[in-house]
Image (cartoon, rainbow, N blue to C red; front, side, top):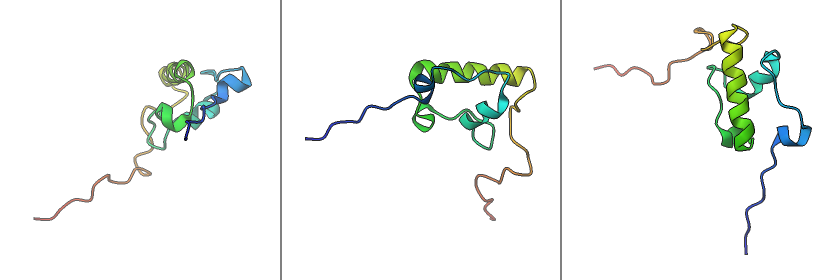
Length: 83
C-alpha cells in the first residue's frame, strides 16, 4: 500500500522566516516574471507561504523587489497567428 510522504517546510526546519529587508532571499519564491510561486512549487507549509507572500508584498511597496520582471527578458507567451 502506498502512502503520501509528508512534505517538510524549509522555513519550519530553519526556524527563521524570510524578511522583507532581504530581497535576495525572497527572490527564491518568485519566478522570473515577478510572480509569487504557489505553495506546491515553493514546498512551504500554508502558514509560511502566507508569510512569504506578505513579506514579498512589503518589499515591493518599498521598491526592494519589482512588481513585474524586465520587459526584455519576458518572451511573448503565445506566438502571434497570421491570418
